[in-house]
Image: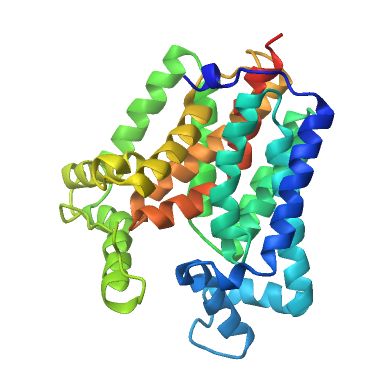
Length: 344
């Protein structure tokens, strides 16, 4: 379905660059006034980071503290310049993937949430956007090996210093890539091994994996001034394999088909964004089997699938899910728009 939208007038390289340039100019212009119109929840994590920079010990030895040390080293002006540079590079690369009018429209729909959530303030997800930029720049050289090494290094470093669950994202991405490349026998073995591995986990492991969602919703309900309009608890206490599967399946539906649970124009727009992301990474690779580009874009798409799979474990509401997922949409745009390059 998405490939049907990648039609329309073929865009010259000059037109694409002009569109990207105008979008970057608009972003840089709006950036300085963003604080006056952005909702307060956008700066929630940024405020925690700023409090650490200001000497607070509330989030000492947490991921906020680790990121605060990085931004503190840049200084206030340096941090603003850093965020704007990441934002400009992200917009330029994402819109620059476009080859046809339909592709430009879809890419713009991918760009907007990421800019809104991650590129007006200095946050943890701003660094994830930077990682996606670096991996795409390396991947564009057409070498699979360096791209894989860079992905392991960047995700591993981020997992070690900021978010430990990025190590799990990397593991799931590796398994997904193996599944894509493997024969039917290999795929069968991977599926059976995954199900068996989950089944033999002790009951405490299921609780450890899924309980963070319940804790996060408790915080949104009781401790956050922003509430939890789309927040949800696990429907079953995650203390068994069956409960784990039911809770995970419920989160899968709730977060990836939000219009079914929260009917409204905002939720419909969020659903469209999620469907574009899912379609871009699960669909057939338009670059064609066996090519270096197909191998690299499949690898980066596997990282997105890793993000989606891990998010189903702990994301407490729709906004948090979209914010985290939007930080890697550059991978989606690159793979999705490969189909446009094959049309004449």
